Length: 250
Image 1 (cartoon, rainbow, N blue to C red):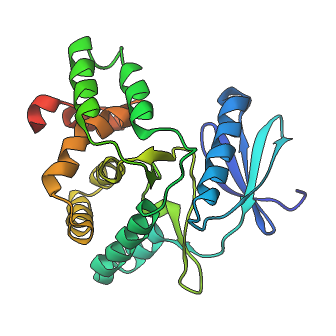
Image 2: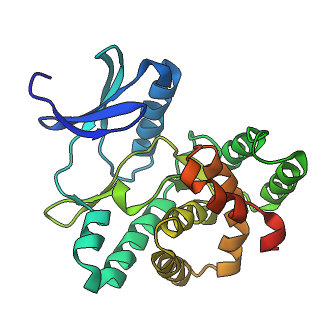
Image 3: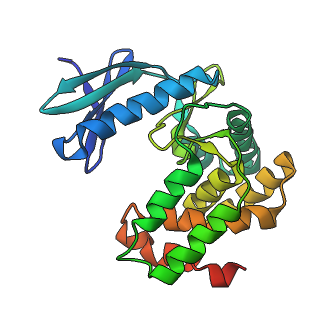
C-alpha cells in the first residue's frame, strides 16, 4: 500500500486506489460488523450472476477495518451526464437499462428489503411520531413481496463506464432483495434532491421501460423518504420529511 492514491474521503471512510484494487478504509467508529456486512453483501451480489467488481479481502489498515475490491477504470455515469448534457436522455436511458438488468437478478441470501425499511422507519422516534411511523409501516406491509436484486443507493455516481463501454455498479453496502419499485423510489428521491427535471426524466423512462405504473412507484416514495431520513443529513431533512408524509401522497 506504499503507493496508494486517495480518491474519496467521507466522515466514516477513506477510499484509495492501490494498483488494480480499490481499498475502503473505515474509521473504528464504523464498526467491525458493518464492514464485514458490506463485504458479505457484495459477495452475495456476486453470486447472483450480475457482474460487479469482486471483493478481494477484508483486512485491517490504518487503525481500522478495510475492504479491498477490484478496480474498474472509467468514468461514472454522473460525470458523463454532466459532461454531455445534450445527450442526457440517452445517458439516462442507459442508466435505467443497467438498473433493469440488475432487477432481473435474484440474490436469495441478501437481507429482505421490507425488513430493512421497517427497521429504519422504526428507528426514527426522534424524527417521526408514532402515528406517522405506524402509517408508514402499514403501507410497507401492504406492498407486494418481491425478491429482485435491489441496490438501495442506485445513482449515477455508483455506475462506472469502462473504456469498452461496459457498465459496472459499485458500492453495494445497502443491497437487499425486494421490490424494484422500492429501489426506484430511492433513486428518484436522490435525483430530486439535486434536480427535479432529471428525477422526472428518470422516473418516466423507468416506468416506460419496465411497464410500471408511475402511481405504483409513487406509493413507495414515503417509505423510501423515511428510510433516507436515517442518514441524518441536515440539508435533506425538510425535503425528505415532506415526502415521508403519507397524507400528502394518498
